[in-house]
Length: 337
Image (cartoon, rainbow, N blue to C red; front, side, top):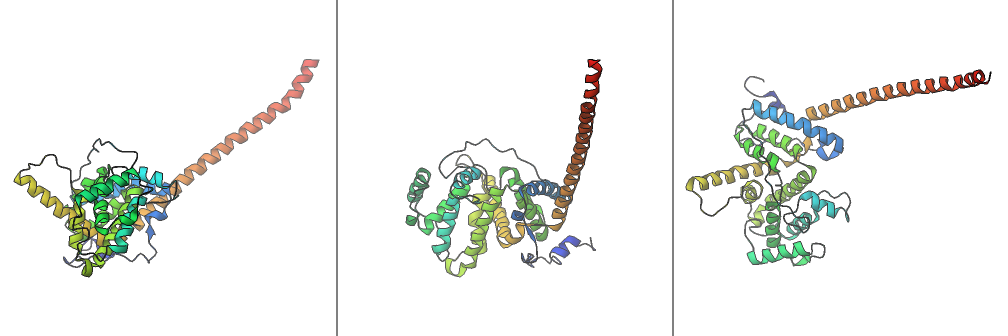
């Protein structure tokens, strides 16, 4: 620390003066993206990121708890309520290497082509009956679905419904409570650093889908003069689909309703932060990258040591076999005598 200011924060951002917006490092400055790494490196990166995040939050005095994922029945066919990995597995039969489900990309494409200038897009609900019909048709014949009949308001409703009904939340059961605990961090800079580590912990399918969604939301905000959807409007609309818990029953106490409202506002603050700082979320900090390289070097050295040992054993076995072959003619002559 330099005085009372975190030195890492000064290097990252400069002095944290309350309302001064956090300015992310430009991606053009030779940064490493998460999708630049191999699958083996991503596994090691996740292991290191988990340790760093736990230590980071503990140092800041933020309490977190891991929640056990609830048992939820998942579907193997259709679109809604199907795990992201299952959707991708089916999509990759036609489109190898795809990282975001086709249906999610289709909905984003409709919204980007004809919905960015629509007033109240994402906020104004469409017809519930039509949404129910489109959902049923998508589940029934996703491959032969007529996308030309889907209006922007329909696509917005289907997009939110798709995210809300994922059997494993987009931010995952494992890390959802940790995302909420980020609000307990007083410094905006530290909040962004925690969100960056959390993003690196997400499974690839969830990370890439979240990334596609945030890119779209930034486009919505950039057209707010036409669609009347400010950054806070977009954040408030999308937060319940990412952070809200499913409550049973219609009767809830006033305290419970107040708690839900606070959760909604807190979720909106996180969504707003993820939209504005999304370029930074997918980059790998240099100190994490150096640790991954050290792990790779250690693994290579162990592998090299095993290779040398194997060669030494093989060499001994070869010499022993050759000695046995040389002794056999003498043994034959002795038996003949």
